[in-house]
Image 1 (cartoon, rainbow, N blue to C red):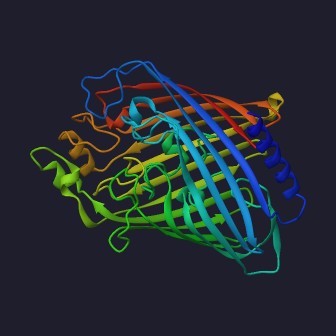
Image 2: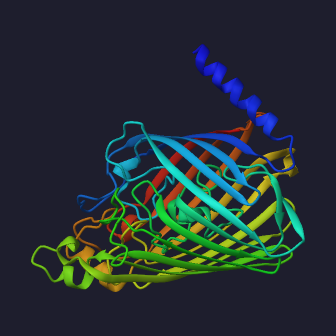
Image 3: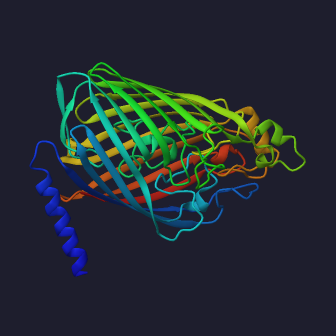
Length: 427
């Protein structure tokens, strides 16, 4: 215990010393998030292997992340994030496409496990003499940055670190918990089972607009832990254009994944529908997303997203959504003298393609949904949370409620009610 206390004091002292120069040489941050959720069970005419549980249950997940940043040169930075994750999601993180806990991974073993989340180098190439100031933050060193630049990130990271950002709906550790609110629901973004990939991201940023592109590895198999090494046969590409306005931003994203995917139409025709029996290299999944945010007042923000993919071939990495629309608001607590508090409310509607529906209705399974058959309806979700600031040392607790109509697109099941509480600490 004394050793742990000594190391903590040393790191905090080191952090304080590092903040003295204008350009930080290094920084150190930490976060821990614990999410407990309860559901009283759902009504169901039938259930399958991947159905949301009809029985009452409660589950808890925990993640802890260390964020280490090092300035290797004037315009070169290195980031390293060891992470610990444990616990489980409700119903083994199955049975709902817009799953209610964004901190839960589809990992069968709930035992806390340590792994490397991120390890990447970022290189900036200045394109103007004008500068801005970057703040000290997780995976961001404080310092002078050109207002117009080209940057490269190479290594292991999450695509969500760079794409589909949104000030009001992006981070399940501090904002909405639902999977289809933290990113575009129909963006099957390349990642292993824990949400990370390897590759390169290239970004051009100017005050007028930004453009970013990434080429990254996909999993060897759907929802897999190992990344595909045959990048000539399997790779993910995405491009995003971001346009800022005075009080708003709009982001347009397009992507295409190539992998050893199965085909829903062929799988539905098998005597025993099994998507894995139809897998073949060269198949693709393509889609797009529109992301909008608007600062209405200093306290009130709103957002909206729409995303779509072709839905012909197997979902490979994120979740089983082929189209998604969401809208919501986030309101700070200044009006009731709670400036650090936030209340959020959002509505989501998720759907799947005709081929995807036919496969599930024939008894097929994905890695998240599959009730044995299907009476299709859009999966509609309402989420509300209140983020309550407890202590000056960055400690919050957030009660959360989610109502899910037609879980896994099935009118014969649900609705589901998920009650939760999130505890988050950061420094």
